[in-house]
Length: 193
Image 1 (cartoon, rainbow, N blue to C red):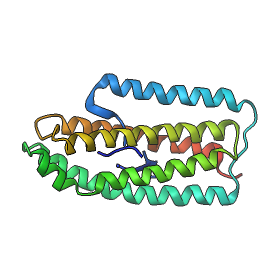
Image 2: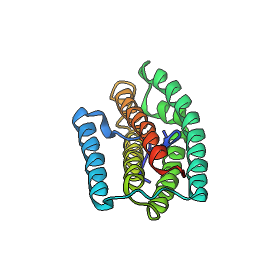
Image 3: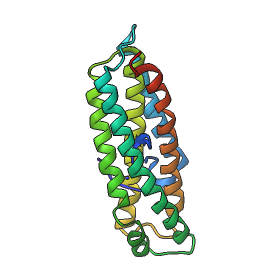
């Protein structure tokens, strides 16, 4: 799906507008996972000991952002499924662009909003909460990157029904699944007690 900064948002499709996995190469997907793991490890080392959770108002912001991302991603997923079916019939890049409409750019835009929110929330926490927010942010970035990569390929005419659209789309959806899974640690570590 879409460009930096679209199955949107935030891996929190519930906050996971996060659609990543650029290009369809399993090696690239492994690199993306390694990057997210490295970022998480660095944050864990930096945050050290105790865990400072989000305040009630910050948690409400997180939940609101997650709900909006879920709405955007749910709509995009429906469109992506329809277009995946079209691609399986050998549709051209132009036909796929028409099918996708603005779904990818919506995902990317919402994902960027999620990242901004996560970064703002990270500044007020420490420990496991900071690590969980950072990990979720990493998956959101990957999701955005994968959607942007797909969007660029389609706009450039480099992707059609026979040239990797479904593989790239599947990679993006796998990143979204990982982003959604990253929400549980955020709830466990960051939700006010």
